[in-house]
Length: 341
Image (cartoon, rainbow, N blue to C red; front, side, top):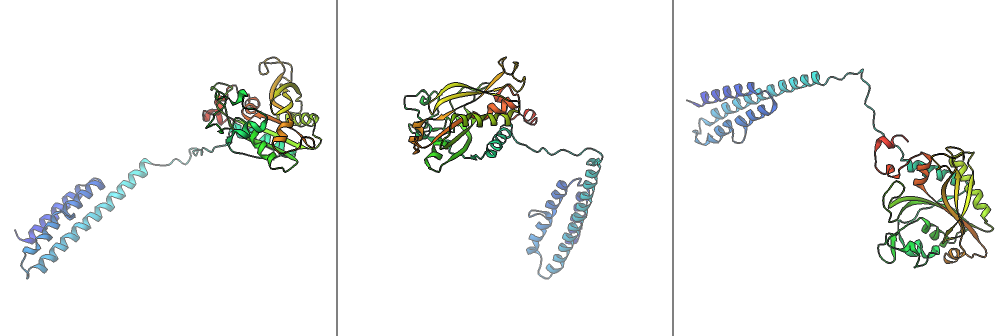
């Protein structure tokens, strides 16, 4: 069999295999079989060295013509296959324009964030500034400068996460107040929101990581009446115009005198219900006049300046305001719960 017949036979085999290719993968197999590095046409080209010099131009031309013919068949078949596949997709992937469009899942603010922004709005409206500080804090700022001595129970490792003897995860945002007082820029009107850490077991009302909002006012002639008036205004803005407040004596190392503040139940108006456990009042925050020792340790003369401080749990506000009965719901990332807010 001469070269011309060999190439004709090869072209015919290629045509049959190309026509039988039902998908792009089979078509690629045909291309490799005939035109690949180890393909049949390539093998013929490698055998050109055995052809006499005078016949090489003629044989080379025939080989090139055979290659062009096979490439043309491959391209034609590829185009037809792509068209067929596209038509099948159009049949199976028809879009019904009368169907409702898919809704984009757009996130929104967390209940904690909503509550925090509302508290910040209230205090900024009263002339306060929002100040933040480090979550990893020195024990000196977290305890000592707040009149909490080394033998105080709050320093126990069962209550506070210590990194070493001097560094810990802050158990309150009060260190931000101490740092601000140290700067000596008076008067001070600030709130300090942020995450805090305590060694608590997780349950419906406790978590080892939660959020606090603490407030501080330092100026001349500040009295407990200023404290009561400020917190009364805060409660009215947060819970409604009918809200009443009640102060009960308490003890905090960094304030003297100290008090717990209750608000009248905004669910029953103070009559007594399940929400307020029948008392008509809900405990909301702790407060008091800044202890003279705290002022002195932070470089402020207690003979010239006085002030008040208060602290409230952000989660507590969110739980009360939105009537949530389990704190864990705020952190479980269940969109069925979160999208209600």
